[in-house]
Length: 137
Image 1 (cartoon, rainbow, N blue to C red):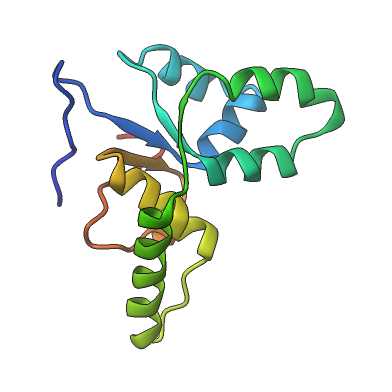
Image 2 (tube, rainbow, N blue to C red; image 1 turned 180 degrees about the horizontal axis):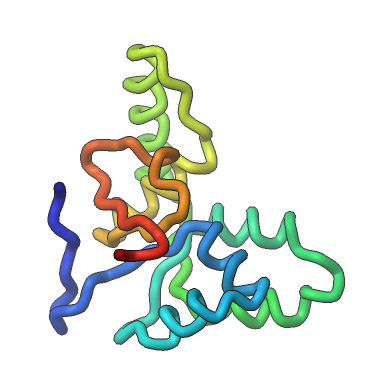
């Protein structure tokens, strides 16, 4: 198993997958307590912002947009797009199709040197990526 990346203050730098934010928005006490206990603000990908806004219910808009101001947003630049494309090409050669949004989220976490926290570990098979399963355990 790959070791988690650690920041200068000794804590793990986390990037949250969309599933984690959705659970928080839907009021999961377990997720909210976990996020509240983090020693530093987590990261999210700009793709995660897109996915959350697309699935946002009208009555959730204010709370959702407020929540999206808390994490640090990793932009999708040419670096992340190229890495995502490389991963998709490498996996396609092995007969594995990867979702473009997931590979962009993975690329953002990777370039930010962050561990990706997700409930969908199987969606992130990239060897270079450090993934932590939710719930942690």
